[in-house]
Image (cartoon, rainbow, N blue to C red; front, top):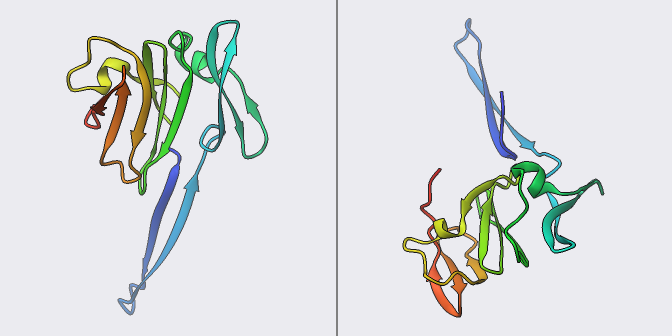
Length: 156
């Protein structure tokens, strides 16, 4: 079986066939990976940006994005944002210059390009900031000095 990093609730029930009495026991199982918790760092290697992470065990994973995707981050990437959504997963955004990417929090693979963040992409691509509320209901992008709604309904 394969599980994504998260907390899972498991319920075991046991029934005594002789008496018909059933009892339940609940367990919480936390699944994590080397990339599921830590500090995400945006690095510049001679004009080429990539991500590294220092996890809670103080292990350093370098070149996470290029390893996961086979290509470097978009040119000019200057900001990384990791948003923890209450009762859900994380969202990871890297942006700057004239482009951005939305990444899987599990393996840092590219999920969506910058144009996918919009219902109708702007003509000028100049991402400046991304805001996300903790419930994962609202998201906003500042692009070229203008506020836009983030398309949270983008699907795989």
